[in-house]
Length: 85
Length: 223
Image 1: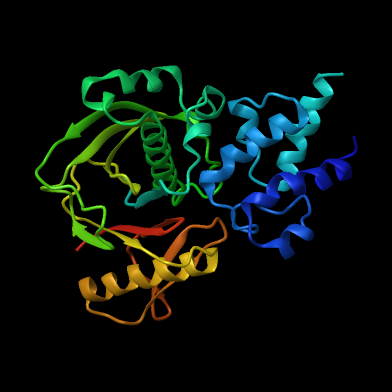
Image 2 (image 1 turned 90 degrees about the vertical axis):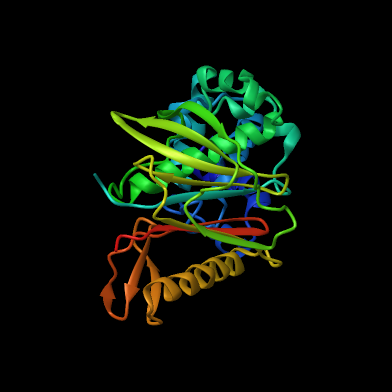
């Protein structure tokens, strides 16, 4: 899976947690989940759990810390899915 | 000792209680040692999902308190550890029907008081817990007498409205405490709210929080 393919799927994971659909449609690797997408921090764990379910991966404490922006989320998903191969 | 402010609020009407109680969820930010704190007699009556979100709100409040002085710091809840939680049982709990509450300090209120460690530093929190919300305020001293805080119910939950409502709520209080009406808030590049008096940066750290139908503020009176 390329980073662009992960980004497209990640958009679906993030969608339930943001009302800002215009920003969501235009996310790139620098998009911050809280300051740009206006996602409440209380939903960050939901996003981690949903990403785990979608990609059948396990995201630990240290990896979760990186998931503050879209690029960080893609890094973690890419790394964890590669570990399965 | 650094001077800062940190608070957080969780709207319990917004959380997913079933998911919260799943180990897969809460172990993302609560350690086994912290989970065991729930077994203490004074916490055993608290629904587990409330306990989980109280710990979240305390950790997020500590992060906000520290982040003002460490802009690059990433919120890493597992590195902020809750070491102890006591119940300070007083006659009064803010009524859940109360649309707004503001106070200086927490005297006379029932609160859950935690001691938190981050690295070599200790922090202290006061959490108000009722069936509508969990609101936490943090300080780096056990003394909360000079901490102003407020919690308010809002009708519109869009992020823009939450943001506007919490600013208006805080600025109204600041104007009454400091007798000035030229205050405004700007978020700095790391997302931390900074208070200005006219064109000048005011020397008062402020913390804002919103979630669902609730907004909250906290700031110390340094005068």
